[in-house]
Amino acid sequence: MTVVTRVSQRIHSAISPTSVLALACHFLLLVSSAITPCFGFSGVAVARLHQLGKVSDGDGYLERIFMSPAAVRAGNLIREWMEDAGLRTWVDCLGNVHGRVEGIISVVSALKVLSIDGKLGELKRPVEVIAFSDEEGVRFQSTFIGSAAIAGILPVSALQITDKSGVTIQDALKKNSIEVTEEHLQQLSYDPKSVWGYVKIHIEQGPVLEWVGFPLGVVKGIAGQTRLKVTMRGSQGHAGTVPMSMRHDPMAAAAEAIVLLESLCNIHSRFMCN
Image: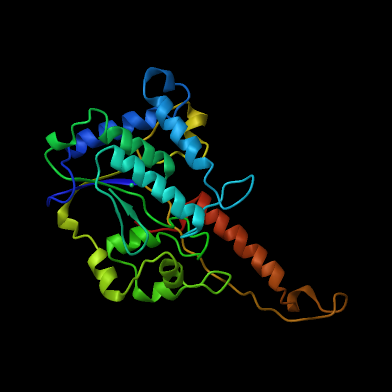
């Protein structure tokens, strides 16, 4: 989920990026068990998280993949909360909920920010709360589909990516009555000049904050993903008679590559240029 402040009038008015960031951090604090008792509305946020946690395609565990029945139900529920907060809502041609994923905590926090005083009309710039679709890429193994479309970097060819059942992204959208074409993708892209501020709140999925004892942190960088399919090729030989110097063992080569990649991640300054 993100909070986007836009220059041109579109939904409701917004506050300055500094204030948005302050409020966003304020509501991130509410998910910290050490600080929760300080805020009167924290119970509402937690209750909503639990409510969303029960919306699942699986029985006894949480599963909501791109355009699945549970994902659609969760989006509709969030739209209800948005509308209760005074926002006008819509779903775009890539399934992004506006007015709302990348993270559930972010959505709940942003809605609390926007409805804290019930006076959206007094804000000076428009605000959009966006729940991006399919950030994790579980179903189609292609991350950031929704946000890439809004950023204008999603190629039309991505619509033909298939899941393990052979269903394309375009098919999944069409099944939910969402038609998408190349023209639709172009219209979905935001002009960077129209965005005045951008705030994203996310629960930390690693152990660092808990380890150092901090309730929140400001992100200065983010991990990028590159997915490669690599084939190591070798040659067969007799285990007892082929000398070690003449062997071409692909398993050993793969092991060396894995160790090298781990070294690159641990001591990246040795392998990267400024």
